[in-house]
Amino acid sequence: MQALLLSLVALFAVSVEARAACDDDPAALVAVLEQATMDGRFEAADQASDALVASFGCGGPADRAVIARLWLSRAVLAAARGDDAAADDALAAAARVSPGTWNEMYGPTLRQRWEQSAARPVAAYGRLRLDPLPGGAVSAVDGERLDLPADLAAGLHLLQVGPSARDFAAAQIFYLPPGLELVLDPGLPSAPPPPVPTRRPIGSTPRSRRVLAGLGVGVAAAALYGVSFATNAAFYDQPDGGRTAARQRLNNGLVVGSAGLAAVSGVLLVSGLAAAP
Image (spheres, rainbow, N blue to C red):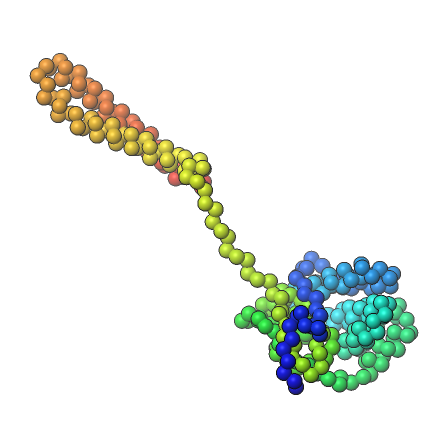
């Protein structure tokens, strides 16, 4: 097999990456797709097709009959747009995935082409590899669990990748060229970045304001007590007993005041630290 690496942006690797739409039911979505296809509402059909692929990006392996119905609708749309090659590729994918699944609404002409595709043996293979692929991730192709890299029939396929076979996290459709190795990014959702801590200015919250006020009152209480302590001896050194008694009462008042301020400081600090940030 020719070793050639292709990326999603390469010509043959036209794919639809999808993130999980876990609230959507694939069976309901494929019915919407088929109705839009029959009504000739191309834009609505394209949107339903993308939504269907996205719905495969969650839960377990896709139902192979639903995958075949997806390819049949895409074949009808391609044929209506005049792209016979794309229509044949989609018909071949539908016949390969679920040979017994057909929609009679699509008419006898397309059915004949579908039957020819179903009867045609697989003539060529390609190789699929995923990069990057996180450790422990599992994959499924066309609704069947498959370890990759692996050789697959050339043509259209559905890929599902996730942490387990019951919990896929991403899905996409891709075209595998014959004789080549295709390298796909599985499109797994990346882990969200850690939250950036919010820096708030000092004193911008009730908690910080109380703490700052408590610290300020505490400093004032300490200063007041320091003044009373420093002047205590000087009060007793005065020769006038009356003046000494008055100054002692003043000194005692300073001590009591500093104690009161200390109490207020303690209340502010305790309430501030207990408050919500």
